[in-house]
Length: 500
Image 1: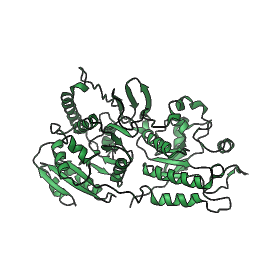
Image 2 (image 1 turned 90 degrees about the vertical axis):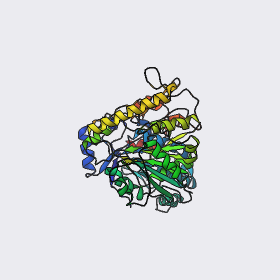
Image 3 (image 1 turned 180 degrees about the vertical axis):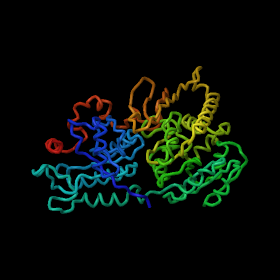
Image 4 (image 1 turned 135 degrees about the vertical axis):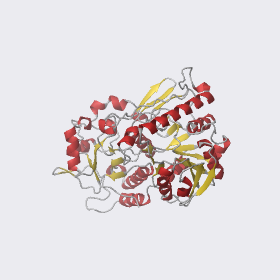
């Protein structure tokens, strides 16, 4: 059973005259005190999404989008803006007075399902009843409630209740069989966490294959304690071990996780959902540092050079890191699996490049989370970076056309930006830009991917914004006139009263 937490989201401070970007340290302490020690956040709006609020425990937005596809695109964007924090939809709703009760029920049901299917931590439906007051004055020109003023249930109440009961995954889905491959070399220190996490996954049809790549520590003994298929080989390197796992896999999808990482309980479901809903040959997700690994691991996690995905948009990747990636087995077999020359790193970049060169599309699911231990000492971190450098040299020799004379990437330039501690307020926010022949998104996942080839599949025309044409960069230019967002479907008079 998953643990639940009580949290508080304060929306009262977000009036146009006092935007949350002006929050001071004292206001932050006030928020903590008002939450009674609970986790807390201020409520934000799409029209002020550019505001930097690094002191919050989670990200909270009021979003009124009737189009389900537009809502899904915008939720993916909010995940990118969240800096890997939980995302709460603090207000959704539809006025049945103007749209009718049946449409209200259908729209709210779809929005609730979409929110949880895309990995939101929660959703708040506005409102319980049509009876609503501003101060002592009744609001009579809207009907956002799930019940009427006399508390008679509307169709929306049943629809929302059913959507909540069936979320985050539809009971009618046919889940593909997935083989999870863990390649390990002397990973005894962290392998147990990995196998415990895999054992607790909520997924109906999966297997775990542990490939012991010639370990000399207690790795085989630890693996034998769990319901996994253990394959022991002589030491041949990471790519060769992964290929052993691919050959042994019985699933149509092969997922990979490192021996120093462990998954969230719904990891495989969110990966599989991305495959089911998109035309992807591979899907990856975030790898977050566990919160209790100590200050040194936290410092390493916020340093440049980490195993970050490189994204072309909020849902399409240029490449995904090996600690959290999954591919269709037939796609891997079609390219001959991983290149065995990459013994410790670089294999993930190489396999992604080869799949994309064949016209494959790589997806990214912000909800498919694994917790990935960072190096806990400067010496280990240094050794890791040296290994990354050697892998980069191998990539340059194999892919000379992608590199300049100076050793810089041409067609896939990866800008790795430092991730300073969020409490200092220095984390970067993804900013969509349009530059000739370049798809550029700057952010904590280091997205700068020049590519002169035409888009593949359903790659959005504008990176980072999906199909929300009306939300393009003009939103930021209108920051000073955010009295009423164009996404708010409530009557103008009602919005004015609610914010006065």
